[in-house]
Length: 499
Image (cartoon, rainbow, N blue to C red):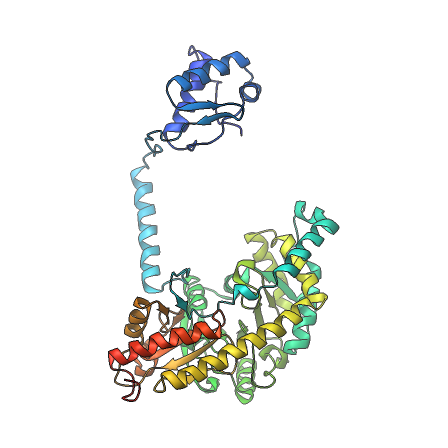
């Protein structure tokens, strides 16, 4: 490595002292870590344009001080166990400090009011976290083969900036995929590749929302979307949800944008009925509003054929369709996409180019081949089969072990909703007790969902438990529910037969 040593203002200081002094500072303030390999004396002398003897002398001084050590024949390294002083921090001017402090307070207040979507990494024995696919089902061999093939056939893609709209071959593959599976007639020119749905929401907020714009959202709704709209200055207008999904009759006329999850409402799991889909599109046509369709887990539908996407029924080009591979392959892949109205492609691509030049080429190229060659469809078939079996097992086991828990939202997706019995523990208390015995279950507030207005105090919503089953085997589900049955009996929530 090249060290940041400057000798142009050394003055009367001897060169070896200046070099040793600056390396000493790098070590003591932690910028050179313990065990770090030092540059060879010949290389450092060439970088600094000094004689090698000067560098050798500086190194000898540091060896004598115990800061570096020579390990023949490997080289010279920073000594382990050096007591460090920590990096020096320059004081800010008072006015600048006050300004930053105010900004940080504002951000903290905003986070307190509307918690961001949180990372989830637990040490629980059995975790029903929502939306997590089973890593054990990832098509590892196929994916490794595709990555190696892309590198052999077209490795120059690693060294080029790509199109911010996304790799053309991937957009073409997605256009064919959503046409066949979701009924959406589109082309690659209407598709933008994103870093998951969350980036898509941010791009849309940048393009669509002005300060104090009104956005209608399902109540309860996905917290990640609500946070995006709030942080772009929008006012959220809650629309109630029932067993048929969002109620179009309750849509506010002043809404400029409607955000909905029609295939599997998040978090309550209902599917927007066909009459309501038609009513929503008629309302959008009358008001000129834009509809954002988040189709986050529609790859998984188990009881007959799924309803076509809302976008497939759109005749006025007012629906924006958001899709993702986070649920079918994995969130770490970070690939989602948008199907846009014609007049929005250019402004969204411009906003995307301001964020980054493109998504990573290698993953896009591999995914394009995976879809185009039929591997993705086969992978989805296996996933649906496995997840349907797990859903069925979970619902059967709940009916057996916890019959007082009413189950809903089971037609598709990767989670079901359980309603705790009235008069017993609320969801938050049950969640905490379950976590204490090694089982992860989640109330609405903990499951990346958000309730608005009076819904916060709705007794029904306070009894909702979200159970994501995709990442657990049938055996794991049974063992987890055995613990929940015992916990429910001990807390007095189970029926007398179970107790």
